[in-house]
Image 1 (cartoon, rainbow, N blue to C red):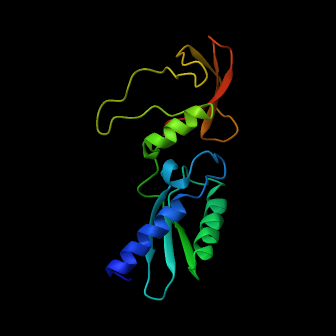
Image 2 (cartoon, rainbow, N blue to C red):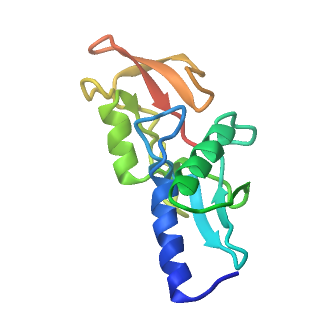
Image 3 (cartoon, one colour):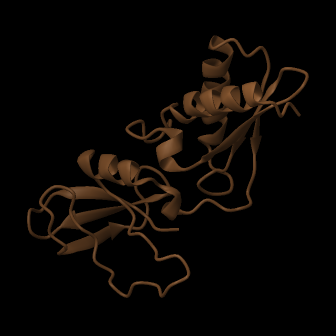
Length: 167
């Protein structure tokens, strides 16, 4: 592995590029905002190794993510890119950045409720409507357009919306 400061700067630059790739299922979010892009390491033979953690085991979007990252990094001059999928540490909805949560809400998807690290699990089950802000919402289906979202409806404004489920 290359460990000089030039490689470290290049790794940081490549991590920004790889992290800027839009999520194929939620294109309003980048892989960095979603929290699935874990890192980039340059090796002495010149290949870049990118580490991704899927939102859940068997996530079908991971192949598209890897292909998009390879495309972005090879366009930047990296001749060989290897994308590795790792399951530990497991991805959690707590990995979604504050900016990612804001973008989900603006896009009409209720972001997952944050967990307090090491603290008690919140007892509230309310989900805030991204359209009007009401917490008076109801579950219509445990699954929506993707397995990581549920379909809800606001009983105040009557609008249906997706809720990114907490993991």
